[in-house]
Image (tube, rainbow over all chains, first blue to last red):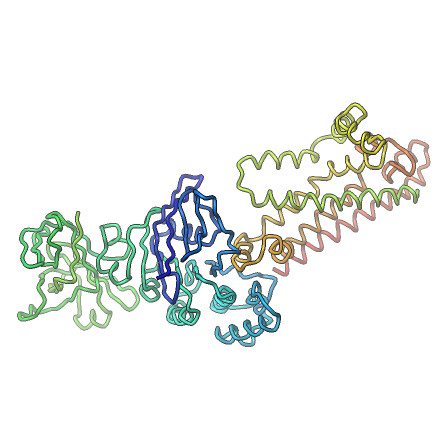
Length: 359
Length: 221
């Protein structure tokens, strides 16, 4: 299996430092998300991969090709790496129209290149806009032109820097679903930078979590979201509840954990130490009014609603049940339960949904 | 008006502009992109002719380019001629005097080009050279034209350095601005006035075109 293997150090004069140990598929369709708060070094990694920034140490290999090797003084210029780069603000050439922007850099015969441009214009729903200048386009159209231009040269690797951040909220929702389809048609491995959790979940296959210039964890998206390696990753990927606890009893892959005044059952590794952090994602918490008895759910906590905040289609409910627990439920569900601050509720959490990391 | 001097002035201004386009543009490109810490020193050196009296430049030019100076001796060995009081002499001096008038507008215009456009071009496989001519230059051209026009116009109006370095030799170093000085010295005010009016109109038209160009460009954005 061909892989992109990047292992390098980039030191900025101001003192910021980015260290990358990164692996991603180098052939076939896949989307690897570089995820982390702003300033964590995501864009720097992308720029180093494109050859726009030169790391001080390390190596970047794409399949059998060496793109960068500090020891051997190899540093291929961007022109020779064959990457497609989508810039955050798109970087469309303001003095060239849509067709000229897409055609820019397409090699080969004139007629062949023109046919390629034509098919991209159709694929990206830009028909009739050939002669428009970038400033005469809407944000969504600009984004499609930029993407068409990036894939026009059939890149071996696509690098997308915050592809959705310049779009407004509603458009973002629509484009998010289309973007993955477009990337699939392009069939090139893609690395995408985002700090938006919804973008990451909707678009990614694999995720690389960064913070302060370091890669903290990488792997299949679902795995990283469900099993963050430590507290920082948990916070970054958005596991809402992270509390310290003490394992007081173990039986058959299960652990009984004392958290403040309550106890929780969680699936836990035999080898995990006794002092742990308990991670619970908001959407894994079920709220009910009545204490049902027979169910498969191991954890049933009685508590009081501390606060309810509405965020778009979801409601984030904070419950005090011996620990501060965050639950994310849909807005209709919240209304059906007619939840009010101060109400008594039961929070149900499956033991397998509780993730335990060493403290 | 002295048509001989007018032709010489045009030749000097044209040559100065051409040389500063060829040499000043690469310097401006480098200044606009470099992250080198010592850049400010080069920028200060580029701006020096703006503040130095032409006599200072002329004095040092004579020191270095004169028969005892290194540059002067080398030039003499190569061509058998002296640099001071020759057309090449005033051309060289005029190039040095005009560096800021060319390089500063070039640099301002080039720095204003969004670097991500240039990087986008590189990532699309287009060489640095071709990127400059198909992305950077088309976006910076009002500034580049401004620099060229200012250089030309400023050379036409140059007086101090040309007089110090070139003296006043008809057909060799006597430019229009020097003929005005001559005419005033010999009390021929009418003739001085003709040349002065011509230079005034020329300068105004040239600056008018430059500012008009930049204003039109700003509105189009």
